[in-house]
Image (cartoon, rainbow, N blue to C red):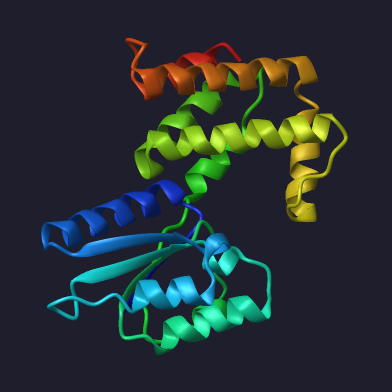
Length: 225
């Protein structure tokens, strides 16, 4: 059995993956975790061929297989997974195309998409536009969760820094044009200051050194923009 989790909402897909694995562990299922970039056929064969008293007591989790560049090795890994009777959970950090999904016709597929509310909020990032930005931020948090909003804010600031430095990120021309327009609202030093603030919030949350919840810390950061 193959379970395939994919989509650009990596916070939601990760949460679903952890819940699935916790359920399997409760059933005494042995789980082996593999990163696709480290896989070769012998190691995959060993993982998928693990046996014990029951046929369903082990599961192999494979991350980001479909993000690998096209190659004969990748095709061989996909074919091997398709022909296996083992329980396989695949996690992808992006939304797979219909062509990619057709390579796993019997998989139980779940897609996790970022809502339009997050992108609407990110489009309003502007030091002069606090009121509207905060309203849309709260809407995005309600729809997608504060963890995803934090991740997407960090990504947006990094992209804007690249644009300010004259580098073109590997994204669509349409997205680049939007970022170039938005970057005009900031100086490079301002963006670097915001990036430092994001790193600081992240450290505080990981070390529990702030009395503020993540939502409150982000709201304060946006207010200080």
